[in-house]
Image (cartoon, rainbow, N blue to C red):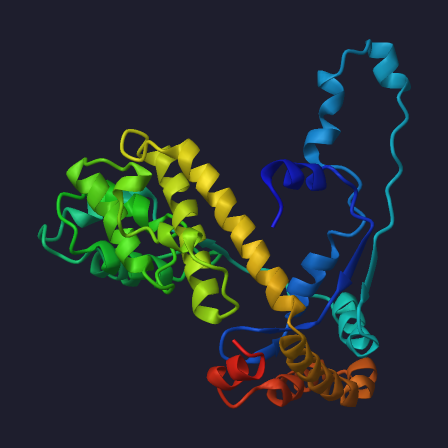
Length: 334
């Protein structure tokens, strides 16, 4: 990962080309071919020659009007998109040529005012996740809109339900946060943050024992549990920073959180560098990659010529499905 300054520098550069390392991904349980819409969205980043800030930069420059007018306008650039492996190219080419179905409705989420008023119709002890689901069931929408999936929101609501003294507004804010409830210790961290708000207690970073800061002082290990602990701490710090803008009087260590977040990112970089340098792991990944490419190669002709691309996609996805997620983890040595 790059530092904030490095990331800002990268954002300001033109993106000439996009090279896909793979057109398939592991979703946590199986391999699947990336959807056409996602492939086109990623590929569409190629050819971007300036950011919105750069486009508006003329207004901030110390130049006269005549100088600004005389300044030549950069011509549109042509982006280049390709794949690292030849066998993946037909899949990408087909996706780029496919006309996507129009979006018929937009996803929306009930506004805070509606949720707050609706919650008053239930006893104070009612689970907030139940209130969300009930509102979802009773809502009547225009055909151009649909209510977004509430899985993430209900998971967060259930995690902080035992915390007392939280107002409905507090719970709504937490449900809208970038909280991740599936990582190791993440539910405990989420509850600890909620308690800080409910009890108006100290939200100083070092006063929250649920944060796994000890992992920073441990020796670097190339194993899944160590990486997951670092990732969970990184997610917790992102959540802390997000909450610090909503509950500024509680989560007061914003500067400290930014510094620790950078330390975690450097630690993750070190772990991943050592992980990718391991000859055994690299060999296992290479074999997995060859197997995936072999399956894609078998479908090159149908993908490039057949109109029934969805059938070919399903066949390809089926051929890449491992026996189980644990089998995948063992095969890459994590």
